[in-house]
Length: 87
Image (tube, rainbow, N blue to C red; front, side):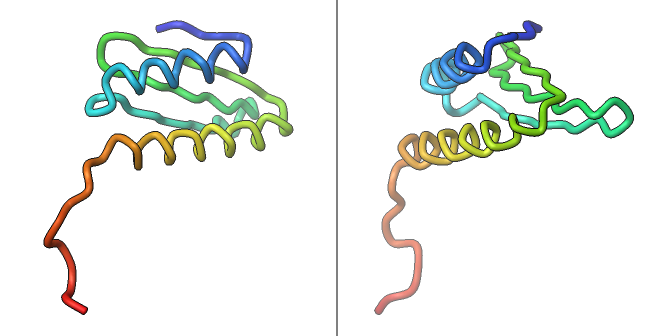
């Protein structure tokens, strides 16, 4: 388990982790109210990367990371044919 202090390094390494194994990579976020910290965790069961912050402005960065992961997940999924209603 590695806490990464630089946001840019965290994003870069988590994207690499996801691209290496998109099937088993998970992304989790946790807000600890009692100390006001937001913890982001990305793991593929072999490597675990964490980023911890107490800055409110980092919430926007987290939103951008969510969008990056949504985009990567859509790229990683093969298109399914024959699923849905006929028009």
